[in-house]
Length: 172
Image (cartoon, rainbow, N blue to C red):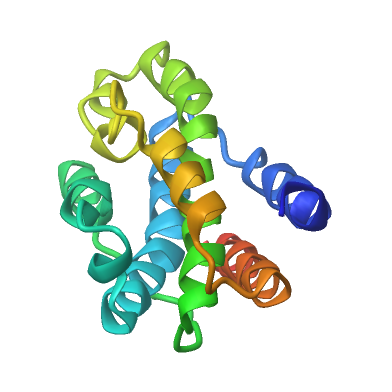
């Protein structure tokens, strides 16, 4: 899946790097864009029954964390992007993107923590979510053991998830 989504991942990373996470307005726009994609993606996962695949879903969900961070910055989610309903394989493709984003969040968290504005570090629950847990590893184990997964469909939905974040970043 990694190789098949590499270009979408690179494009999104390039787009997100335009947000200056060391200043209030840049970090707030980053969180707004992230929430605009994350919230509908997580809603689609819940509606598709993600808790049956991942009983620890409440531990994995970051919607509350990002909404709280935006609240700390005096903002709300100004808009959300639309996402399609998910199939079982679609859930796995979407989870690939969401769980994988935690890996990059570690680096972003350091940038935010080093920012001169202390308000940014106080609004880092989203980036810090899941730290110290083996969520990526347990996701990969589930993906490898999932016999009913249509790989091409999972890849398509991973690309859809990347595209949702791209559309949100465009609008932020």
